[in-house]
Amino acid sequence: MTDAEPVQLLVYRFAAGAAFRGQLATALERMEAGGALRVLDVLLVGADEASGETFAVALHGGRAGGLTAALLDFRLGTHGRAEATRRALAPAGEQAALIEALAASLAPGEAVGAVLVGHAWARELAGTVERTGGRELANALVAPARLVELRSELLAAAAA
Image (cartoon, rainbow, N blue to C red; front, side, top):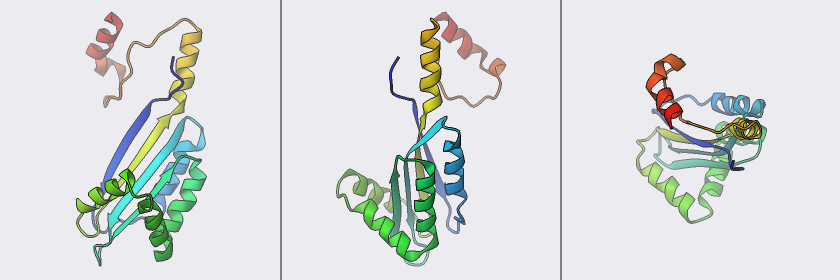
């Protein structure tokens, strides 16, 4: 078993006029509340609707409460947004280049958000399975909501 937890990348595009009223920050906070998921990184890049100017916020690790405060400050004021953008672009390098590339793909008013989520629960479950003599046969993100809809995948994993 590895000490690393599975990590999932989630990316979203927001159309011009999207209303950011704190719901994203609240959703991130709720995700981490039980400790099963960890928000590892958040990146939000947008193009101001009026000026087309890039804005960005990049947050790393920590608890969702800290992420929530930073995202709310970013949303609520032009000063908070300008400061967050400056910090996100300050370390010239890969992060600044990524922000610039994402911004180039946006029309005025649009935004792209990315969240990297660590599945802490999976590490705990894997440890328990290992300690009880089991081993993982399959690990995949799937769309169907019922196991019977995944018959072929289950049979393939069990045959391995």
